[in-house]
Image 1: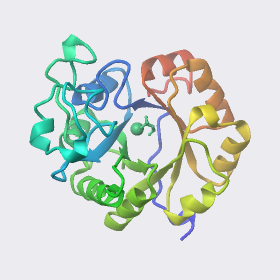
Image 2 (image 1 turned 135 degrees about the vertical axis):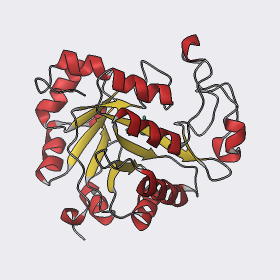
Image 3 (image 1 turned 60 degrees about the horizontal axis):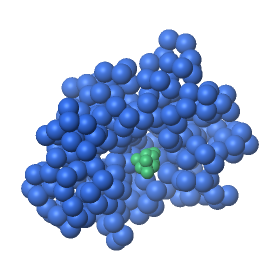
Image 4 (image 1 turned 180 degrees about the horizontal axis):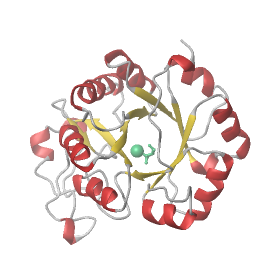
Length: 259
Ligand code: G3P
Ligand code: CA
């Protein structure tokens, strides 16, 4: 299969709220999704991983300490335990009582808000394929039909493989820190339609190569409007930002666009 056979991504806005809108609300919570929409975002990115009892939750880190008042590894705890923890107070008192959301709750909130999404699959060693399968199955079953089709992305190749096996029709994004020389081989092997990379390691030549070969390129995490402007000038398709409002407004990208 060539990259032309990979599911095509929906048209992307230039700025995507990162972990919801991580500078404005506790990351990866329902409040962060709502905040992103209130700031004018049309798409958000968030992270999903499995609990010990195979439930899907929004959480970036493997452990709970940084973003909740709980502790331990999410993969070692059942959902009921994780749900007891406060996922908002660490960010600001106004968010006290916010919970770690399930993926099902997040999809429902996206539907209410009219938000598209890039769902990043995170996993502990040995659980990546299963997590990719579970995420893809739920998205295929419960994605709000009025929304643009989502992108499932991961740094973990088994997660992409699992997602493809479960729901090949869903667009997949290949995540890198730095773009390796063999990026195209990997993208074609896993039928990925988009390439996602750390903006700090991009340069005009690699951006041009990726775009010339027909892939959308999404760069993380861009909170500086001047840097965003440079990336767009090079040809980057979209940036993930914790400050989506500031990046779009100050960068002046695509007159009249909303993030
Ligand atoms: O999906 C882009 C970006 O979120 C990947 O890095 O560590 O913020 O999940 P991280
Ligand atoms: Ca992420």
